[in-house]
Length: 199
Image 1 (tube, rainbow, N blue to C red):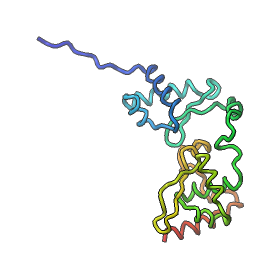
Image 2: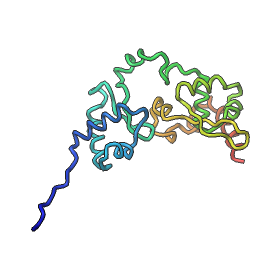
Image 3: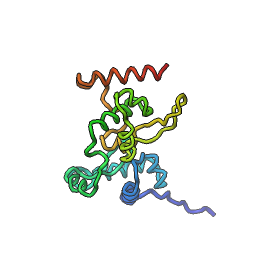
Image 4: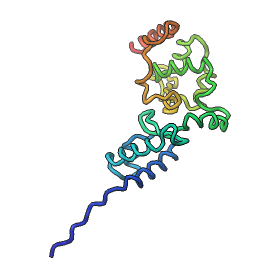
Protein backbone atom coordinates (compact mmCIF):
# COMPACT_ATOMS: atom_id res chain seq x y z
CA UNK A 1 0.00 0.00 0.00
CA UNK A 2 1.36 3.40 -1.02
CA UNK A 3 2.02 5.88 1.75
CA UNK A 4 0.43 9.32 1.30
CA UNK A 5 2.78 12.07 0.18
CA UNK A 6 3.59 14.67 2.81
CA UNK A 7 3.98 18.24 1.69
CA UNK A 8 7.15 19.95 2.84
CA UNK A 9 6.20 22.71 5.24
CA UNK A 10 7.20 26.08 3.87
CA UNK A 11 8.08 28.74 6.41
CA UNK A 12 5.58 31.56 6.84
CA UNK A 13 7.48 34.75 5.84
CA UNK A 14 5.50 36.92 8.29
CA UNK A 15 6.17 34.53 11.16
CA UNK A 16 9.87 34.33 10.30
CA UNK A 17 10.05 38.13 10.09
CA UNK A 18 8.59 38.36 13.61
CA UNK A 19 11.11 35.79 14.89
CA UNK A 20 14.04 37.66 13.33
CA UNK A 21 12.69 40.93 14.69
CA UNK A 22 12.72 39.48 18.21
CA UNK A 23 16.23 38.07 17.79
CA UNK A 24 17.56 41.40 16.52
CA UNK A 25 15.92 43.34 19.34
CA UNK A 26 17.72 41.30 22.01
CA UNK A 27 21.05 40.99 20.14
CA UNK A 28 23.92 43.01 21.60
CA UNK A 29 25.72 43.27 18.24
CA UNK A 30 24.79 43.16 14.54
CA UNK A 31 23.98 39.65 13.27
CA UNK A 32 24.81 38.30 9.80
CA UNK A 33 22.29 36.45 7.61
CA UNK A 34 24.03 33.15 8.41
CA UNK A 35 23.80 33.84 12.17
CA UNK A 36 20.12 34.69 11.80
CA UNK A 37 19.54 31.52 9.77
CA UNK A 38 21.23 29.45 12.48
CA UNK A 39 19.20 31.14 15.22
CA UNK A 40 15.87 30.74 13.42
CA UNK A 41 16.57 27.31 11.95
CA UNK A 42 15.43 28.53 8.53
CA UNK A 43 17.29 28.52 5.19
CA UNK A 44 19.27 31.64 4.24
CA UNK A 45 16.98 32.40 1.27
CA UNK A 46 13.93 32.64 3.54
CA UNK A 47 15.91 34.71 6.06
CA UNK A 48 16.90 37.16 3.30
CA UNK A 49 13.23 37.47 2.26
CA UNK A 50 12.13 38.09 5.85
CA UNK A 51 14.90 40.68 6.35
CA UNK A 52 13.70 42.54 3.25
CA UNK A 53 10.22 42.65 4.79
CA UNK A 54 11.65 43.99 8.05
CA UNK A 55 13.73 46.63 6.25
CA UNK A 56 10.57 47.90 4.55
CA UNK A 57 8.54 47.76 7.77
CA UNK A 58 11.23 49.50 9.81
CA UNK A 59 12.31 52.24 7.42
CA UNK A 60 12.97 55.91 8.26
CA UNK A 61 9.66 57.73 8.51
CA UNK A 62 7.65 54.54 9.06
CA UNK A 63 8.90 53.35 12.43
CA UNK A 64 10.68 54.55 15.55
CA UNK A 65 13.39 51.96 14.93
CA UNK A 66 15.22 51.34 11.67
CA UNK A 67 16.74 48.08 10.48
CA UNK A 68 20.14 48.73 8.96
CA UNK A 69 23.05 46.77 7.53
CA UNK A 70 26.10 47.67 9.58
CA UNK A 71 29.34 46.07 10.81
CA UNK A 72 28.81 43.02 8.60
CA UNK A 73 25.29 42.27 9.79
CA UNK A 74 21.84 43.58 10.63
CA UNK A 75 20.84 45.65 13.65
CA UNK A 76 18.13 48.01 14.82
CA UNK A 77 18.85 51.64 15.65
CA UNK A 78 16.68 54.55 16.68
CA UNK A 79 15.09 56.45 13.81
CA UNK A 80 16.53 59.90 13.18
CA UNK A 81 13.47 61.63 14.65
CA UNK A 82 13.84 59.61 17.88
CA UNK A 83 17.62 59.88 18.25
CA UNK A 84 17.62 63.04 20.39
CA UNK A 85 15.03 61.64 22.80
CA UNK A 86 16.97 58.36 23.04
CA UNK A 87 20.17 60.27 23.71
CA UNK A 88 18.64 61.83 26.80
CA UNK A 89 18.26 58.39 28.38
CA UNK A 90 21.99 57.79 28.57
CA UNK A 91 24.62 59.72 30.46
CA UNK A 92 27.46 58.75 28.13
CA UNK A 93 26.30 57.59 24.71
CA UNK A 94 29.21 55.85 23.00
CA UNK A 95 29.48 58.10 19.99
CA UNK A 96 28.62 61.46 21.52
CA UNK A 97 31.02 63.96 23.02
CA UNK A 98 34.15 62.18 21.82
CA UNK A 99 37.12 64.48 22.36
CA UNK A 100 39.57 65.37 19.61
CA UNK A 101 42.12 63.11 21.34
CA UNK A 102 39.64 60.21 21.34
CA UNK A 103 38.80 60.71 17.66
CA UNK A 104 42.50 60.83 16.72
CA UNK A 105 43.18 57.68 18.74
CA UNK A 106 40.22 55.92 17.11
CA UNK A 107 41.58 56.90 13.69
CA UNK A 108 44.97 55.39 14.50
CA UNK A 109 43.43 52.13 15.76
CA UNK A 110 41.01 51.93 12.83
CA UNK A 111 43.71 52.47 10.20
CA UNK A 112 46.58 50.57 11.83
CA UNK A 113 44.87 48.17 14.24
CA UNK A 114 45.52 46.02 15.91
CA UNK A 115 48.15 48.26 17.50
CA UNK A 116 49.62 48.84 20.95
CA UNK A 117 49.53 51.86 23.26
CA UNK A 118 53.21 52.64 22.58
CA UNK A 119 52.50 52.65 18.83
CA UNK A 120 49.47 54.93 19.29
CA UNK A 121 51.50 57.24 21.56
CA UNK A 122 54.34 57.43 18.99
CA UNK A 123 51.92 58.34 16.23
CA UNK A 124 50.04 60.95 18.28
CA UNK A 125 53.12 62.24 20.06
CA UNK A 126 51.41 62.25 23.48
CA UNK A 127 50.57 59.86 26.30
CA UNK A 128 47.38 57.97 25.38
CA UNK A 129 46.76 55.86 28.49
CA UNK A 130 43.70 57.84 29.60
CA UNK A 131 42.24 58.08 26.11
CA UNK A 132 42.65 54.35 25.46
CA UNK A 133 41.07 53.54 28.83
CA UNK A 134 38.12 55.80 27.98
CA UNK A 135 37.61 54.19 24.57
CA UNK A 136 37.76 50.74 26.17
CA UNK A 137 35.15 51.84 28.71
CA UNK A 138 32.86 53.09 25.95
CA UNK A 139 33.26 49.85 23.99
CA UNK A 140 34.72 51.57 20.93
CA UNK A 141 37.95 49.55 21.05
CA UNK A 142 38.81 46.13 22.49
CA UNK A 143 41.90 44.11 23.33
CA UNK A 144 43.18 41.91 20.51
CA UNK A 145 46.03 39.80 21.89
CA UNK A 146 49.58 40.87 22.63
CA UNK A 147 52.46 42.08 20.52
CA UNK A 148 54.95 39.21 20.20
CA UNK A 149 58.03 41.42 20.51
CA UNK A 150 57.22 43.66 23.46
CA UNK A 151 54.28 41.85 25.04
CA UNK A 152 52.08 44.97 25.04
CA UNK A 153 48.31 44.59 24.57
CA UNK A 154 47.11 45.29 21.04
CA UNK A 155 43.82 47.10 20.37
CA UNK A 156 41.30 47.00 17.54
CA UNK A 157 38.07 48.82 16.85
CA UNK A 158 34.79 47.06 17.67
CA UNK A 159 31.46 46.46 15.96
CA UNK A 160 30.13 49.32 18.11
CA UNK A 161 32.69 51.66 16.51
CA UNK A 162 31.47 50.60 13.06
CA UNK A 163 27.87 51.01 14.14
CA UNK A 164 28.37 54.48 15.66
CA UNK A 165 30.17 55.69 12.53
CA UNK A 166 27.67 53.88 10.24
CA UNK A 167 30.23 51.65 8.55
CA UNK A 168 29.47 48.20 7.16
CA UNK A 169 33.15 47.38 7.66
CA UNK A 170 36.50 49.13 8.10
CA UNK A 171 36.91 48.91 4.32
CA UNK A 172 34.44 51.83 4.11
CA UNK A 173 36.83 54.18 5.92
CA UNK A 174 38.05 56.97 3.66
CA UNK A 175 41.51 56.48 2.25
CA UNK A 176 44.12 58.68 3.89
CA UNK A 177 44.95 60.19 0.49
CA UNK A 178 41.33 61.34 0.16
CA UNK A 179 41.36 63.26 3.45
CA UNK A 180 41.91 67.00 3.67
CA UNK A 181 45.45 68.38 3.53
CA UNK A 182 45.51 68.92 7.30
CA UNK A 183 45.69 65.12 7.61
CA UNK A 184 49.13 65.08 5.96
CA UNK A 185 51.04 64.91 9.25
CA UNK A 186 48.83 62.07 10.55
CA UNK A 187 49.26 60.19 7.26
CA UNK A 188 53.06 60.55 7.45
CA UNK A 189 53.10 59.27 11.02
CA UNK A 190 50.79 56.37 10.19
CA UNK A 191 52.90 55.36 7.21
CA UNK A 192 56.11 55.57 9.24
CA UNK A 193 54.70 53.30 11.94
CA UNK A 194 53.24 50.93 9.36
CA UNK A 195 56.63 50.56 7.66
CA UNK A 196 58.34 49.88 11.01
CA UNK A 197 55.75 47.21 11.83
CA UNK A 198 56.27 45.56 8.48
CA UNK A 199 60.01 45.06 9.00
